[in-house]
Length: 357
Ligand code: IPM
Ligand code: MG
Image (tube, rainbow, N blue to C red; front, side):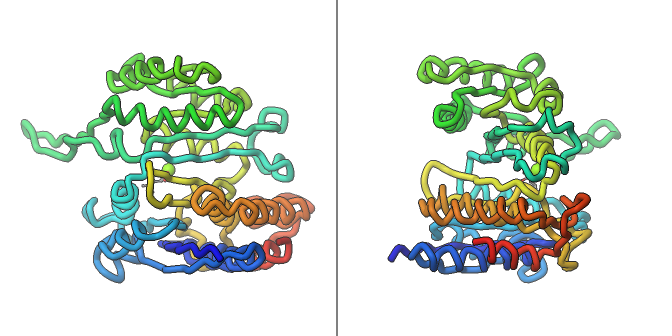
């Protein structure tokens, strides 16, 4: 029997509630499909700061690196906003991405037919949307040096550096080209090459690689236009390739096409070693501990973990089908609620998902 070691990172806010739902469902599908999952829960983010003083304890990073896959819920809490940057929850997540060398972040955005009415966009604009944001995750302005705050000429200045090397662009572009190949063969690379040197290098590298993927149609788009096109005509996109900061912004925008960011999973991958699977949404401190959270992005992240990280495709299919079934039956969490549907809390949604399995 296959045995997979999973590190669970419940994190902050609604994290523990949605982790509990995912764990129950993972137990159920593993039994059904004849493999075993062991769970090792580790602290990260604000809960790790409370427990150890550090947002990413060394023991958490070590456990993650040694696992077969890592499933994280969410980190962050306004309680820590006044701490110095290196002590904040977000720094723990960035340290985990860097420490595990997870340079490729995949954020699939697919419209669920049952949720078309939940989107703020018109049904005819979003019907059939099926795109993938490929975001570079360990470089760019998030990690570039130099950065900081300095006093100069009686003024204070803050600065960060947006930087990519050719090899960093090549490896993330390769991921995107290969994905485009398996999908509809379209790759749109998003940059700001009309203004930024770092973006011109990005565009040059993607152009250089294009002939090696003659079956993929490559286009380039400036990020401001891409932000507009995502709400004007999102169906034009198949794979969207972009850097760390633009990807952060565009993936939230793309997620909202589905009506709620509470539906979107993601995978963060390196060249080898375990992947990190997490919902795109944050820790939602405003509803934490109130049994209001939508656990579906977390369950879909668990499905991505099963498929990509553990190669348990049948079990992944089951989780995804359970989500579709529960939505088709009219069950909704508060974020997705519309007329004629039944509103459930996080736990009750977990129970329905379990029944639907
Ligand atoms: C995301 C989040 C993170 C990011 C934060 C929490 C550091 O917004 O995963 O998109 O900016 O990458
Ligand atoms: Mg973000």
